[in-house]
Amino acid sequence: MNPIINRYRKIFEKEMGIDTVVIMNTGVQDPNFYYFTGFRSSLFEKCILIVKKDHSYLLTYDLEYQDAMRQRFNGIEIIKMSDEQKARKLLLKEIRGKTVGINGEFLPLNNCNRIKESYKPKRLIDISRSLADTRMIKDNTEIANIKRAAKITKRAMQLIQKHFKVGITEVELARKFDEISGNLGSEGPSFDTIVCFGSNAALPHHSPDSTKLRKGDIILIDAGAKFNRYCSDITRSFIFQKKNDDDYRKKKEMYDTVKEAHDLALRSIREGMPLSRVHYIALDYINKKANGRYNGKFIHSLGHSLGIDVHDGPGFGPAYSNINAKAGMVITDEPGIYIKGFGGIRIEDDVLITEKGAVIL
Figure 1 (cartoon, rainbow, N blue to C red):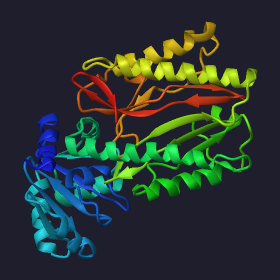
Figure 2 (cartoon, helix red, strand yellow):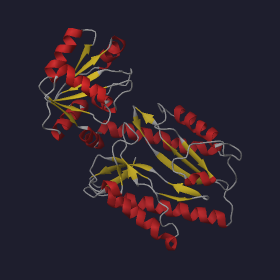
Figure 3 (cartoon, rainbow, N blue to C red):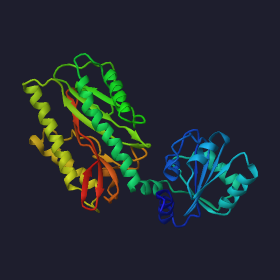
Figure 4 (cartoon, rainbow, N blue to C red):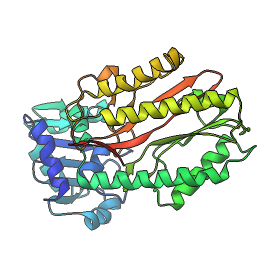
């Protein structure tokens, strides 16, 4: 079976009370549009995708029609918006009097009102949570794409070390990383590449600036690549030009503690286990290590789901105690320690949950 058609069936299994799913792009593309079409070429601005249990219709403009026809597959029908009579007839057939699922987290209120006023659905239901839950379980094609994206980023992490030198700025190193990643096959960064030197590494979402690299600094790089629109998200921490002094020993202890917490969390993951419990396993380890020296220094959730978006669904931590590990999920494992004015260490990998546990992609 075409994996795209299988995705249609999955969302209707989760939302059994709906007749139709309408994915409506605005000036940007709803990530679910790509999930339900696999169309990589063209923007498809303001296009409408109507999803049924075993087929779909794409209403598109002349600008993208040829691209859509080139990428179509058995199970999707392409209709020009300029064929107004046919387009309106289809919309009325699939929406009027029907219970329609929409992505309420994406679609602006004026678009929802336009659907109600023009096509008179029986009900509009926000199925954004079900869409996110469906996308959390990856099929083999998605896993292969994320694995390839992760491979690009991990190789870039190795190659970037050749460019560590005293005086280079965070901005310069971030640009060099993106260049290396692009040369390795990345379609673009999953998010703005984070590079932190020294005490800036204590700021988990620091934006690269003109800070220059100095001997003995921590270097923290958090970056991701895209492959077939699927994201990776990997963090590595380095100690530049190690000095045999107390400063280095403190940083090395931080690094070892984070690495041990990362590996402990990875080994603990089992199907059916609340992912918040995995978070607490890493958190408790860090809090108790070194006689409590790092208590309260791990300040974010252990990870998040990964896919078409770099945050492809909810994270997992204290606020998400109801999310259990399931085979097919791809999540991040990213514990960290952050000490204001001194620096921080984070180690992050992209992890596939299987029936036997978890493996790094």
